[in-house]
Each structure stands twice: as C-alpha cells, then as structure tokens.
Image (cartoon, rainbow, N blue to C red):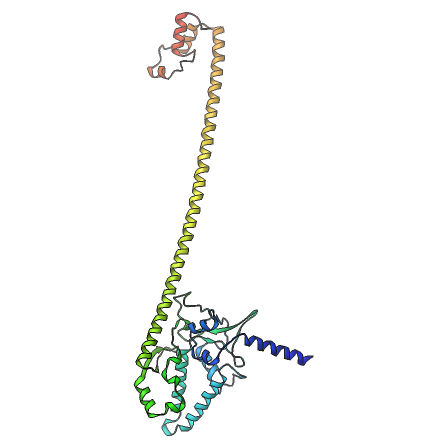
Length: 360
C-alpha cells in the first residue's frame, strides 16, 4: 500500500514536469525576458519570497558553486554544466604553476560569471534539488528571478512593457549567446591555427555595468555581417519595445480621456437634472404665489363688496367721501393707480356725490 502511494506521488511529479515542454540547452542559452516570454507563451511569474537565494552572488554560487557546505545538491537543472565547470577548474588548477597559481582558474571563474550575468538576466528560481521552484500555495507555476542594479532580488518585477520606468534585470535587452561565432565551434576546430586567427580577427569587446557596480568586459566573436545583423536585431527589439510602450501609453491616454469624458457627461447630466429640478421647483413656487395672489385679490374683492354694501346702508356718498378723503383730491400718481372698478375710489365717490346717491 505504501509502495503504491509512493509510486503514485512519483507519477504525479513526472506529469507535472512533463507539462513544461522545455529544452534545457536552449533555455540556458536564451535567459532574457523576451526569450522566456516566448518560451512560456506568457510573461514569467516573479519570485516573491526568496529568503536564502536573494542576491545574484548567492544564486550564482547555488548554480555553479562546488565547496559550499550549506548546499546539499540532489540534481538541479544545470547539473551537467556544473560538473563540466568543476572539471574544467580542476584541470586548470593542475596546469597553473609557480607565480601563476590559480590565475587561469580565477580567470575562467570570472569569465563564466561575466557571461552568466550578461546572457541570463531572467533566470529560473531554482533549488539544490529541483530545477524549478513553484510559486507555492495553489499556484503550480515556475517562478523566475529578477535583480535590481545592485544585485539584490527584485520580488516585484513586471514586464518592462507594463512598467517602462522599472530598472530591473528583466528590462535588459540582451542577445543570445548562440549569436557568438565561438559557440558553434567544436573542441577540435577551436585549437587550429586558422580558426584562432579567424576568431582573433572577429574578436570584439562589450562593456556593461555589473551588479557589483564595476564595468565588466565580455569578449564576443562575430564577423561584420553577423555583428551588423545582431545590432539590427537589438535595435529592432528596442524599437519594438518602445513602440509597444507608446501604444500602451496611447491606449492609457485614450482610456483616460474616455473615462474623463464619461465623468464629464455624468456631471453634465447631473447638472441638467439639477437645472430641470430647479426650473420645475421655481415654476411650482411661481404658480403657488400666483394662486395665493389671486386668492388674496378675490378675498379683497369680497371684502370691498361687503364694505360697500354696509356703507350704502348706513352712510351717504358725501359722508364716506369726507371720511376717506379729508384732505381733498389725492396725488395724481394715486389716481392712475386707482382701481376704477372700486366703488369707493376717489373718482367713483365723486360721481356718487354728484348724483347724491349710491349706484344700484
């Protein structure tokens, strides 16, 4: 029962590894952000919580170190390359003699570190026993390491197209080592006089700033045609990234303008609604005031009619005239403002006085 369970677990692990259809050699030789994106079919997943292997120096020691007692290796994705590297170092130590002790091995170590740093700005987060380190939790994807300019791990690196201002190793546009003419030579070819002379003529020096702050030199071997083609490819890659960044910025500005336009339309709609509500409120208020005024006028007319009826019964026109206009004719302005339908106005009272009676 226990054996069946162990076999089932091993089969599951094999199936998980088979999901990554990778070629180790190709992956090792093209570890830049663009190549990894093409390999995965999507942007790499950044390692968030590297606690031990959190600097480039430590990761390099994990990949290529030999005498580190803290590393208990079982396999590792670069196991064959590391064994060949250690074998080469042992052979170089044997040839070193006298004052040149450790010189060749030290130079080889530095050259490997320089090449690895230059050609591999986006590397898998590995462990001594596994060639990939999954994200953990429910995520079963390989994670990848990015480094800041000082060599410390950047746990928040994203695609340079998403954040153009990011200054991590993933933003470096680096060619593949397979572009180097030396890469295609066999061990037997590289030691011939003709090949040595040809490679010497094609030798070029690239300079780049290392994680330790120094400027490192990397010898490359390319003929004029290959160098021109590579320079064109790098230039096109940078132009393509810049073009994508500009498209992203234009799309962002377009979405921002669309959002601002939507907000403005919403505000205008709200303002229009407020103006309409205010207009309706004013119309209701004016209508209410008019109704109140008409009601007051009706009440005033009723009051005047009732007063006129009482006066006609108890007083003569002359008596009312003396009481209403004791000082005689009012001002001319008041005459124009008089209500001619009012039987107690100055003009109508004068007529009633002349008649000597009220109108029926």
